[in-house]
Image (cartoon, rainbow, N blue to C red):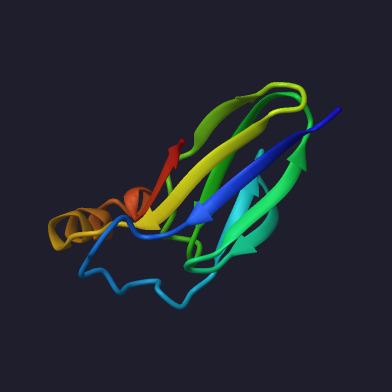
Length: 106
């Protein structure tokens, strides 16, 4: 059996963020690109049961932290992603590009 990884890209509520709005991001599963996700879209792929890593990259330097997750047989693992939503966090992310994309398991 397999597990479904479901990733949703949507900004949380009203925001002033406009960076990366029109750029699609690479979806890296266990360090390998498995697809891309655009703003206000979702992405799904099948994964084998077990422990995996997930990371998103914008242009190579802007990225999310690496997230580790457990995939139980036959389950759906859900994540939500977006760029930093407010200017103080955008400034922090410009200095720490590994924090540019927010990636949270739901």
